[in-house]
Structure formats: C-alpha cells, structure tokens
Image (cartoon, rainbow, N blue to C red; front, side, top):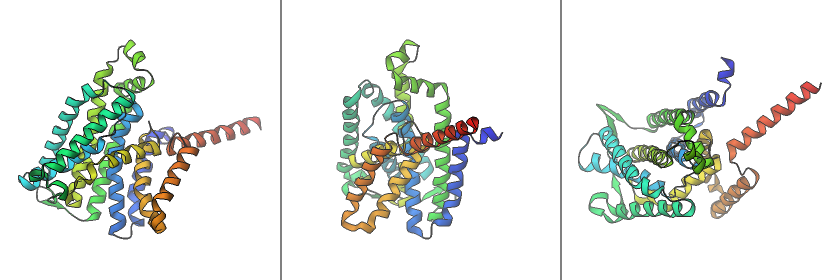
Length: 324
C-alpha cells in the first residue's frame, strides 16, 4: 500500500490534489485567482498537447486554433443562438474532434518541419476565419459570452471557477495517465522511438497518430470553452501563432513525456510573466534569460531533471549505506 502511494503516478496525483486544495490559502485577491485559473486552463491544454508531442513525437504549432475554436464555438452557440452553455460546449467539442480527425490523417503523414509547417498553416487558417467572419465571431473586436449555467446553477465568481478548473485538471491528468499506461500509450511510445519499428510489430501508426491528435484537440477545445465562459469575452488574441508557441514552450519547459511536467510548465510560465512585471521595461529580457538558463541547465525539462536528480541522490545514499 505504501509503495503504491509512493509511486510517481499515485504520489503525483496526490501531490497535485494537495496543491490545488491548499493553494487558495495563498491567493489573497481576485487577481491571484485569475492567474491560478488561467494556469489551470493552460495546464489542461498542455496535458493533451504533451500526449501528442511528448509521447507520440508529433509536433503541433497550431494548437491555439483548437483552443480558439472551443472558445468561439461555445460563445456563438450560447450567446447568439441561445443554446445551454453545457450543450454548446459538448457540441463544440464534438465538432472540434471531427475537424481534428478530418485534417489529422493527411497532416500527420508529414514528418519533421513539414508537419510543423502544416500544423502552423492550420492554426493560421483558423485565426483568419475567426478574424474575418465578423458577423458571426465579432471579428477583431471579439464576442461577449454568457455565464456558464448548469440547470438553474450559474457558475460565477473566481472561487467557484477555481475549484471547477482544479477538478477538471485532475480529471485531465488522470485520463492522460491512464491512456499512457494503456496499450495505446505503449503504442505511442513505440511510435516516438521508431515509427518503422512500431509498424513492424503490428502497430497502425496512422490510426494512433490521428487518435492522439484528436484527443489533444479535445483537451484544448474544452479548455477554450471554459476560458470563454469564465472571462465573459473572447477575442482572436488566444488563437494566434504566438499562443501556440507558448503552449509548446510550456510542454518543453516542464518536460516532454511527463504529464506532471506539462502541468508544472503551464503553471510556471503562466505565473512567471506576472511576477516579472516588477522589472518593467526589462520584463521580456529577464523572462528570456530564465528560459535560456533553464534549457541550458535542465534540457530534459524541469520535472524529469528534478526526478533524475532525486533518483541519483537516492542511489548514492543507498550505495553509501551498503558500503557502510
């Protein structure tokens, strides 16, 4: 029992749940709650994106497009057509999954920088459609979004949203961990190591890449829908290429092929720019220096590097005890 609790998977889930439960004691006002909620939403996207990049080895530079489709889909259906917000979010998620399935098969036949360019093009197309279809989306000015309502319960206030996003983040991490330990997860790791080798042992590379692409798009769509209803307003700013790069950077910073690394990366890189505002004009310079230093000294990502350091320390201690 104790060994199971000490395992990286169970221990990590318990640690994440403890952080979510205790963090409100350190959040003194609405501003800090806003940052925590935004970090949680980014973490949900990054958990899904990490399945695609970290485990399947498929780069995506257009994932902000799926986030934006989730946000705008819920906003349009709920605000312009009067759909219940929950139904709007579910319908939008299904539509985004269908789009990801349709475009995933031809795009994921590409490899390397060709795949990166194709996903970048997909994100740009989504951004252009959202920006130019102003009668439906509000164009560059954006669109207002009705509060999230479930039956007669209206979800308003940063405290309610914090616990909702925290609970959904736990569910996202749990789903990702279970998928990683499933036969599909083992197939994805095999694809990352060698696609040819995986196909030799009977793994359908195309199907598995499309499935994980769809799953990662669903994670992004759900987070986008929640972000739209929480903020009450959505603009094309979250659909840009820059936001896609930010999401990929969070995954790499935390540690690819590490679910908890994706969460840590999203939390740190969402919070850090807010803390660096004290440097005023030098904010971006300091942020860049922090990123460079991290990639130089912990190139595997924060969480895998710390885990490796911890394991090395334990082995040294065990060796000293055995020697004694």
